Amino acid sequence: MSMLTPPGMGGKYRITGDTYPRMRRPRHRRRIVLAGVSAVVALGLAGWGTLQLIDVFTGGDKSASAAGHSRDCPTPKAVAPAKALPKPAGIKVNVYNATTRSGLAKTAAEELKKRGFTIGEVGNAPKEYDKKVPGPGVLLGAPTAADGSFTVLGTQLPGTVQKTDTRKTAEVDLILGAKFKAFSTPAEATAAMTALTKPSPAPSDSCSTTKSG
Image 1 (cartoon, rainbow, N blue to C red):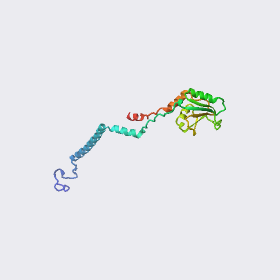
Image 2: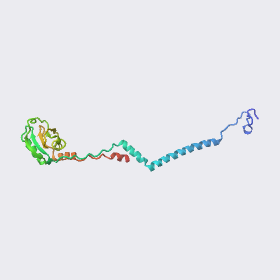
Image 3: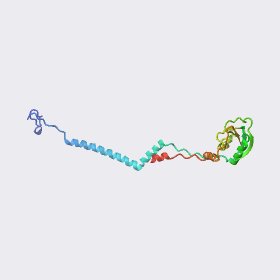
Image 4: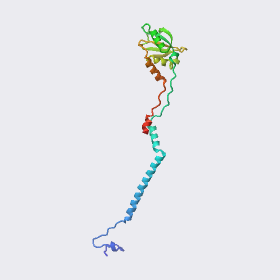
């Protein structure tokens, strides 16, 4: 036995000459480590698969879609009710001419009568308005006419100025101004009235459709 051989170690561990035995780790430890890593990976995959199954059976995709919809899409608003406006026959109109054109009030009154309005007085404008209306015209009436008669008459003559006074009656004065040329065509007036009286459309569901697709 060589002097380099540790006490009690003979046989294949005996050191002779300049040759040294190679001390290797037992191979069973490496197998244990590999088995442990494989077990961890298998458990991780099993857990991920379980979560996917939970999402499928509990509607996880629907919840996520709903959450995305609530973030990206505005909250739908209630549909606005239609406006209740008076019929032309229920509006009594006094037609006054504030221009230098003769017979303008009579011609305008006849046209409004054809369109269903009730005609009251027809003549020249009062002194405070005579030749002092630069636009198409002025609508003058009680405060209650602002959201009713003025709106309906405005579809016949866009660009009119609306003013209120202290009168107690429901009749409305139409004072024709320097820029008055003609009323809107019946088709234009009807379209304007329809736009005012129909309900506002419901919000589009294109956002939800895009999300669900």
